[in-house]
Image 1 (cartoon, rainbow, N blue to C red):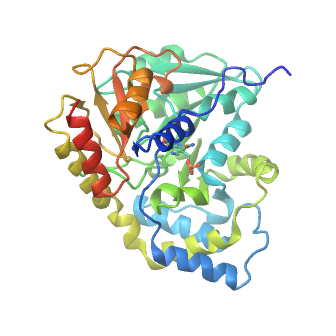
Image 2: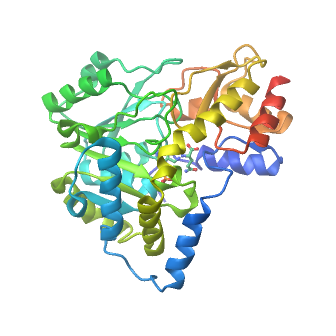
Image 3: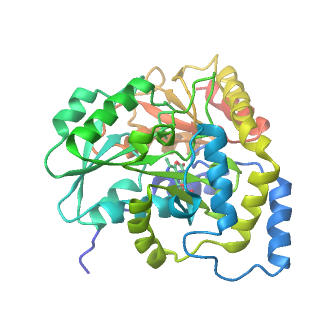
Length: 379
Ligand code: PMP
Ligand code: GLN
């Protein structure tokens, strides 16, 4: 059969985790927490299923969870949204991104993405009949040149996808970025998809400037988030999309045929957690900053150059003083010979640029981080 996605293979995250397990390596590749979801949340999930809340939720989401998400946005971003009309609960951010893209992108439309880019954007755009236009960003700053972005806009440009805090560069967009983005969107009548799954993981008091804070930007945006990152439950596949009512209507037309509705007991448990334990979200940055600092310190005597991590649970390492191998081969050898699994950065690029950079995930126990750093320091 002729493939609709001829260039797509198994995701690098799956591949590296399989390789890590096969070699008994410390797995700092795929981004998921090694520690468990809070026990309060696990108990809430168990109680909701035992209480018999096991049938379909309304397609956009249970009102109680929509309300708690709106309350979270009001508390964190001082913006009041209409929970019923604007919040749609999805099967993780992956579904939300896919549906947002299907809702916006028409045959031959162009969508601007910034490389390194998360792997799910491009296939979703192509399945909608569109094409991604890739704007490469360079280490170590991964800064966006907005004049260059302007030059990439054509009359086919339908949307721009941003991701802040950014996987894998760990950078956060600043106010000047959002201002420049806003003027381009308005001038050219372009939509925005804002992937903010790491919104609550920021370091050194660098603020996360959610698109939801800015009424002009959010008026033309679908903002995507994930409970997996916030509550250490990536396996629950729970996320959501916040958009203006007219965009939510289009989003929901597709969501109802992709997922119809998301896991009812988890919606109830997450609503309870958001209501009763707001401190969990508020402490997340401190929690992860300690892990970042521990790993950075443990790697201080290594020959890797450590790139700054402003948010997310990722840290980039430049290995050009250690090896000339390309990053995919380097990562393969790292698993097989050193016992540490990492992600090569080239897989996030349409046109790999030959950088010698790998990504480590530090959402791991202290012992794992220290053991991995000890191995890496021997190189
Ligand atoms: N966007 C980015 C940038 C991510 O890193 C991830 C997951 N790691 C997702 C989206 C998908 O999130 P989810 O697991 O909730 O589908
Ligand atoms: N987003 C995670 C990462 O960047 C992986 C998610 C997945 O495996 N699909 O590592």
